[in-house]
Length: 146
Image 1 (tube, helix red, strand yellow):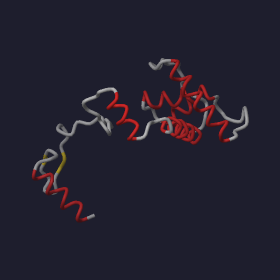
Image 2 (cartoon, rainbow, N blue to C red):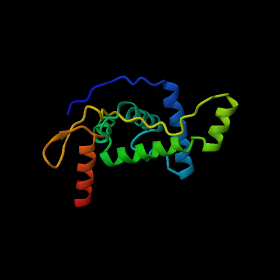
Image 3 (cartoon, rainbow, N blue to C red):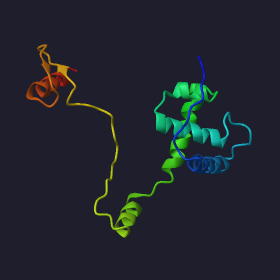
Image 4 (cartoon, one colour):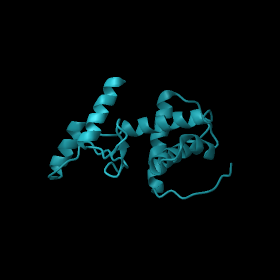
């Protein structure tokens, strides 16, 4: 495997902020100094690379010199630390009302997909487009069999 250097398009201030949150979490847990494979800064950097680049966790861990299991654990810890910072629903709606927002998106998940161009084969072997009567009937028959 060949390693290489890359650039990450997030502000250094964001990496430092997440590193401070991770350091506070480690102090709260009572983690002794120099017992972790990565410093808080590099763990924060790894978490942000994972968010930004959507890279395979095993490869990401190898790039940072840690095992796959440790990479998964560090990413989960970073996500949990970030999730603890989010406001609850009432605070977010109160802030939106105070700022005068007309609309609020409550669940902003984005998925990269192209369902209209996707074709599937029905039970009869005919190709169909999702959402049509044939594909809906075929998926209903398939789900009853399984």
